[in-house]
Amino acid sequence: MTDDYQANDRLADLIEDNYRLLQVISRFGMSLGFGDKTVDEVCRLYGVDTLTFLAIINFVHSGYTQVTEDLNNLSVAALIDYLRQSHVYFLDYVFPRLRCDLRIALSGKPENPINVLIMREFDNYTAELNKHMQYEDDNLFPYVEQLLEGCVDTDFEISTFSKHHHSMDSKLRELKRILVKYSPKVTNRNELNAVLYEIYVCEDELDAHCKAEDYIFVPVVYNLEEKLKNANR
Amino acid sequence: MQTDKETLHILVAENLPIVRDGLVSQLEHLTTVHIHAVSISTKKSLRSLLGARNFNFLFVSPDFDGGFDVSEFRRDYANIPCIAILNELKQLRFCNEYYDCITVFDSAEKILSLIVNYQKAVQVKQKVEFPDILSIREKEILSCLAKGFSNKEVADKLYLSVYTVMTHRRNICQKLQIHSLSGLTIYAIANKLIEV
Image (cartoon, rainbow over all chains, first blue to last red; front, top):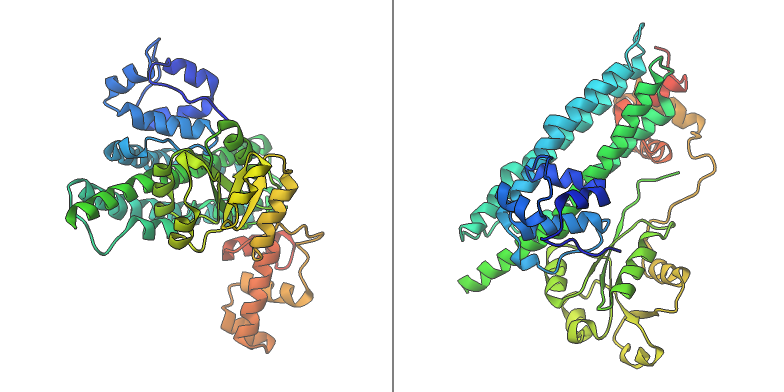
């Protein structure tokens, strides 16, 4: 249950209220050091559509339960940028860092075969996540960009995509379960606990990303499809 | 134990913020089913969300955004049960066409039973005492799989049909909540089912 943030709120105050909003801010390409600038001022500075930024911020702040009433007025291009940046964040930053930390936490001589398998499990998950996000980068977003140019693809519809879209979190849950239940004793136990904690945080972030796609991006694209279909009738 | 059950997606369409947010909060806090609820307050958003994705339930106030047309909704979305949210008992007379109704006086348990009764196939979290315990046969099959045997090779080795091996394999994955071969191998090593 939340009061919605507004364009004239100070961005620094938002983060102070809810540090989870940091993930959104960085993926819109904004860097810390906002001073006393308002949401609208920072959005203008970075060339981000304010309404779209607020829609995501308020959705995350509500615990992903409140969808903006301005779905029709959001910038599709800004949403695509945001989602693309999220993919880069996970694939180029979060997972390589997690892998490195997990490798260190599980290192030890002689190497335990379970640790080798845990690393394999991690790599398999990362490869699948990569494939999942690559599909969206290579197929979904270009499709939507075509819609923005007024081209309707008769072979693809956003509702088909949404039916098959899932958050990839059950496999990550499995990896966590394996770490909790079957990790061999390691000397770096603080490191291993810290990596597990990071994986939990990452899981929350992936879930948030998936929900933003499902409840904001997909409905916005659906509206765009409907508008084009009506215009072509 | 947390199991990998499907999430129920519920849409809440209600004018009053306190009722809307309160219901979402109640739904999200139910522990026996995984629920993700989202709320909206205009018909425009209702149309966008219903068009864009599947929902398992719609909870809606009969006077939602100037009046909700339940007949039209049932015609367009026959597979989504529509439950009326009533702020006053006298509104009951408007509810004939709804699948069911709840009132602001109802408990979370009432809402839960309504959901579970409808969704017969709903994935209720199973509280299994010892979910990890495998049968001797399952352990045998798991150790073969962990050694790198294919389903066919396991079937030949243990004089079983491939179908039976696959059924055992499915049950093993279900019990352990592990589905990848490397994950199953980790279990087998950690539980000394195979030597390495």
